[in-house]
Length: 506
Image (tube, rainbow, N blue to C red; front, side, top):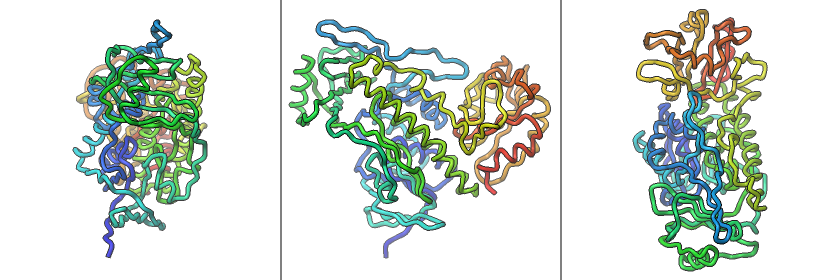
């Protein structure tokens, strides 16, 4: 008889998206299986840019210090025009601010991002099951039963496909993947060393459609060579070295990874089918321009993790529908931006090299979605559905708000005497994620129920001071994924119950 094992969530795909989701679910005390079709972890540099918002996700998971230690800043571009090399600043380097602690993109090869997340999973007690593919599944009202390539049948409450652009989960679910793949447009990506090439520039040879980005803490570069239509590359290492030499006059060596990449621009028609959900490249694939794909996938997982946890604890099933409602428009917008940058690069336009605030993904918002009604109260600076900014404040063991928010819990901040008085009476179920309650006060003094806004910056950043209609009193509810889940200015207990009904267990 084929064995059947129970779990809460079966995840297919152990890349950055699947690994982030697994880590988030494990810290919620859920049972997780993580299978990966490939026999080992990914070995290339492919997606190498970690945007500011994704760095905040990594900090919440407790691994940002590792990422910063293994990564580095993006170098200036060096554009080679014959004998002249012109410096070019692709993006402005910004200084940290109280509300944005990590304003700049981090250069971190994908295999290192994977390794950091995999070490986290190991610390959390999870073993990734390599060489195990999903071959199909059946689902009913209560569970999903998946068949693995080992012959094992796994019964779980949910199945998540984070298994890339060729997702077996998406295919088995029968979900369309709308978009296009240009088979005539291919790019070689090569991880290698290059003799006599400086490591302080991201080198670009526009006339040769080639580039070489130095990877941090190594002698390696990520080389990209755009191929001409009909060009069938020889992936033999000596042939690749000869091709690069003919284009740039430089010698590459010690190749560790090669890929022939075709730009896909595709978006799944739905993120959910019953108890089956998709995340990352299984739901959307991008051009490489702008460093958006990996980041969007990690943030898919961050959005989905707490919702699965709450749904399993008894929250309304409609909460899982909000995953698609919030993330699909984000992916569609990112696809458009990535495609625009890639087209500019294809046409050798300087605009294709520029990076700005939009790529940092800090301004992404869920306003107008099912959990963020447009008619909800707002402060002078924030609406429900916006990213919850960091801010200086004093609490036991910390001097900033992000440390208070770190973890799988919800957080409510009370500004003003009336909101503070209402804190103990706010209704919250015993199941699901914990609610942590803090009164915000000025002046000095620290205890476990208070945050001290000794500089006044917390109230300023959150737009409380002088907000029309609040008179300094407001409750700010922050979701586990770091977005504003509610802004309440009166009728505290009843309005809090109404604002949280969509995502708390019944």
